[in-house]
Image (cartoon, rainbow, N blue to C red; front, side, top):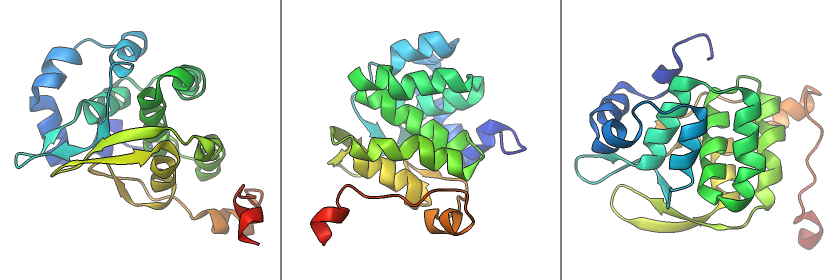
Length: 180
């Protein structure tokens, strides 16, 4: 992925914490794309690392496992679209993986932007506490921020640049009418 070992998309200290974690050793060993689905539907929050020891969350461990097994695009889209209707944390995991692993900026935008209309609540574990966020906020963070869930995301061109280059159509926001 991106011309390198996909596991290197996570910084070395985070990788080390993941592979040393109890969740990784107990729950992620031997998972494939099908069995990972069983673990992902059990997720109850998103997040990166937490606490003084910066332990990795199950969400981050499963994202790392996805990078390790690099499932087919169709499987990730199934996680995002179909299974994600019922399991919101599975959708968040698939979106996070897409943002990390997919190389074409316009595909990232066109795949993730429809989920800016998903307003379901998500619990997010931060380093010190818990916060409440929404799926659309999480997707927006993936598209505009450089760091999400204790992970530095690969550089992505801004949407306006891709529009100027003719690689993306202009996005019409559903809130645009309300602003006028």
